[in-house]
Length: 192
Ligand SMILES: C[S@@+](CC[C@H](N)C(=O)[O-])C[C@H]1O[C@@H](n2cnc3c(N)ncnc32)[C@H](O)[C@@H]1O
Image: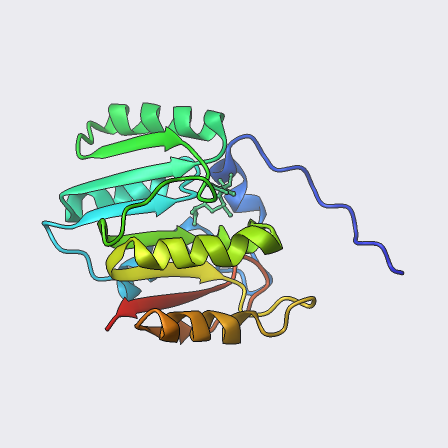
């Protein structure tokens, strides 16, 4: 059986390496991702938002001025510390960051207007993926902004399954495909 090529270790600070990991189409950096989130998502001044897997919170901080409150949750403590420090330096006060995992985080039903779930779904184990996705949809009042590869060689039905789950839970799923050299495509699940 062919073995998977060795993967580079996860950097301590995720965004510190973004300039080195541009995709072959040359647009896969933060300058590209931020406008994409803003283009596809609608934020309202009274919104309560959560950003799951926020890394050092650069996208989280960009959205903060548009909403009432945004909460960032991230698995790696060093990234959370960096996010808290940057937010303090920038004087952003409607934001909070904490260490946590989307797999164990308790989320109340319909507790957030918008959930950002960007670049995380694909990293979850097979067991955790669908339970977490259902929990994320359930926690959402309006929309989930998801970024994940549309397909995986071992699971060609990933997007189909996602569409089915959205349908079962009364969401529409809109997909914005891109050439996925890295990071995936944007999808918006909107509550009907
Ligand atoms: C590819 S980065 C994306 C960062 C950011 N959301 C963005 O789009 O730029 C994925 C982040 O999710 C975090 N992560 C991975 N699994 C997680 C989990 N189970 N719960 C919370 N965060 C997780 C990683 O540590 C990493 O910082």
